[in-house]
Amino acid sequence: MSKKPEEITGSVSRIIPFSCVDGPGNRFVIFLQGCNFSCKNCHNPHTMGICDHCGDCVPGCPSGALFIDSGKVTWNQSICENCDQCIDICPRSSSPMTQLLTVAEVITQLETAVPFLTGITVSGGESTMQLKFIRALFKTIKQRSHLQHLTCLVDSNGYLPVSGWEKLLSVMDGAMIDLKACNNDLHLWLTGRANHRVLDSIDFLYKRQKLTEVRWLAIPEITDTSEELTAISAFLKTTAPEAPLRINAFSNSAVKGQARQWQNMSSERIPLLEAELFTTS
Image (cartoon, rainbow, N blue to C red):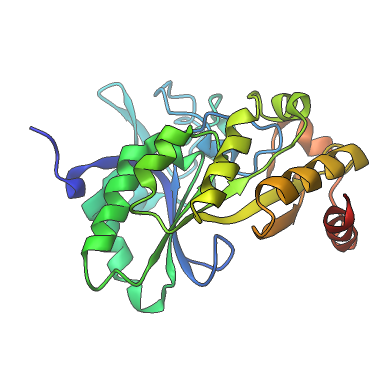
């Protein structure tokens, strides 16, 4: 017997009840666990992997909120001090604080914040890896009269194939797609994946009027080269000429590995990059 939409579960890294940076207005944001990219510059590196219950994080928990139960790492939220030491320790870029929540449980949390919200955003990790959960969540929201005013957005790396986006078209209001790089070799080096699906996603969503915005991370001497700026400008002018473009400045404060040594993007340079992108032919 198939589950009802309210019974479908998702692996949730964390929930932010109010956010003004994850889409237009004030939004309820769900960060889902797991990603199909391995970005060197990931600002949520603890959402990449799935916990394999190795237990490496347990001894390092200063509050004793982690323990092994029946071979699995268990998190006691009531005594957790949110120090994130377990996240720093994890060898799989995961988190022992991930929760498996049903659509009904997420809706219960959402309802307490509804009077103050513009909409809901699912992010990650890569949210579309849990397509069934997203579809069930959005469908449930659209079916409830007191929630129907909320816009349902997906924050994605764009790697979902077109066949996957087609399953979301009827329940989502839009998607925000990260364009890591137009040059495929650069994209492969940054993320571990080719970019053809990302470009296809932008094209498909724009044609279906579901492309809320394209997001591009400006990294000094890596993605802000004249060649890359020219390629991005040409692609967007051809494929999604009226789509909003958000330029984000790279910061090495929340990354791991070699990206910690990369130069921060100055706020003064962002307007210059914006001007170059919109004037490059």
